[in-house]
Length: 88
Image (cartoon, rainbow, N blue to C red):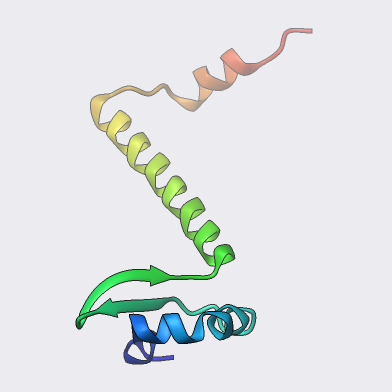
């Protein structure tokens, strides 16, 4: 579906809410809802939202790791695994 087809006025959302929800089962494309011609909100399938949130969380962890590396706040793998070894 093209981006233009995903942009709908708020009146479409009001009139077709049940159909939109049913349609997400087969087509989980995000809808952009406009009000007075201006984008105001996004409507998306809950599973797609959850995947997006997981992706954001992973990207945040990568960004934090990169900052720590830039600051020199890390240790080499050998010393890390040495600390993790459980003495028997």
